[in-house]
Length: 194
Image (tube, rainbow, N blue to C red):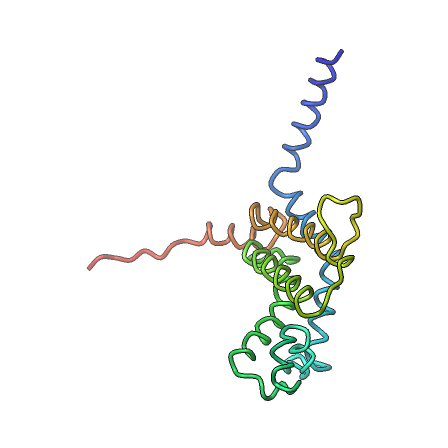
């Protein structure tokens, strides 16, 4: 009986794995990212720029308060006094928060975008703890009986989801796959030796 159940179990999941291999998990991971995190990050990024299309190209003071609290504080809460190299950090962080999630959902340069998002989540978590004063309940703890902490519980799951995309890619239902197929079928230019 146990051997029969084991054989049935093995056959069912072997077929299931074969049918879903190469497309399902990458698509599912990107769908979950879109459902859970896309709105969160786009909204957060939107608070860092001005209103409207023209405002999109203007990083606001709020970006400095969110990304570099100690730097803006050290300069009297005046973003115009912040050194240029910190401006680059704020601008890069703001536009990465727009671009990386969109690349992941589209499945374009997914591995690099997911790797960038892992770095983004780690820096975001550090800033929340070190500079925004996240309390112990918000930080949480691993291996406790609660699973509701915003940082160690939720963001660990986010990073795991992103790590899957870094390691396995977006799958066959993605712009990465289409781009790869296009590059494979594009004839290579032949250089003649003269």
